Amino acid sequence: MITKDVIRELELNFPKNLAEEWDNVGLLIGDNKREINKVQFSLDATEKAIDNAIENGVDMLVTHHPMIFKGIKNIDYSTVLGRKIIKLIENRINLYTLHTNLDSALNGLNDYIIKELGVKNSKVIDENINGENCGIGRVYKLDKETTIASYIKLLKEKLEIENVRLVGEESSLIRKIAIVNGSGMSYWRKVKKLDVDLFITGDVGYHEALDAMESGLNLIDIGHFEGEKCFAQLLKSYFEKMSIDVIIYNDGPIFKNY
Image (cartoon, rainbow, N blue to C red; front, top):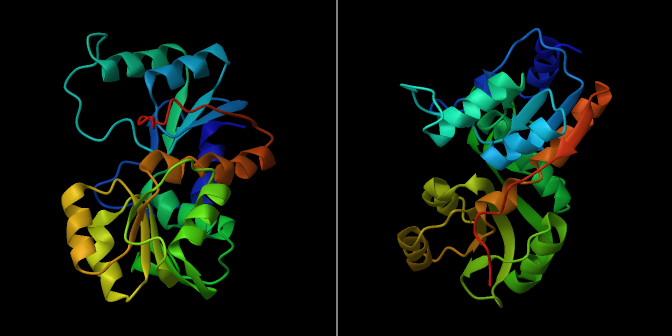
């Protein structure tokens, strides 16, 4: 299957116009006419991830986070980014990224995560005008109240997370929950207005956490890598339907817990 046909199939489900304005998604490096027989899913296009793709004869590296965000003034081996671009080109590996369009889409990453948590009905927190029932974040209600401690146990089990950070009390009762995968603290004030009992996201900074705590909002930081590594499982079935071999490799998490 050639690249442009693979991309057409992906973008039927996760259109590029669902990406945020600041984002950079789609085919970042490569050839639309290249034959694709094997792909590698990696959350980030790290040098180790690229080396692994080379070693395993991969035709396309599919990432969640874009390797290229800003303009590039030079490409050479003196920089990590330059070295990675050259390696991909020399080894004829396409780089394709689905980021906030994957997050926002109906049946995208937000929806995949809450389904893993057993959620059947939800609403979009920040709606995207380019798609019905699409946008950043989801808010939902549990069938009955539970404690934060119990919900942390569920999060760890279903999302395969070892550790979380809590702002609030483990004994607090919760029912209405909001979640934004990745780095979602820019939404906390909007979430607070939804009168939720708990907000789940990643990359929570100290001052953001302090402000949220003083406003009475319970927070769980599940981590950025930890909350999005499941993107590979979401996409895997799409590539298998196209008879494309899939491998998963992640050079992470970045932060280690001791």
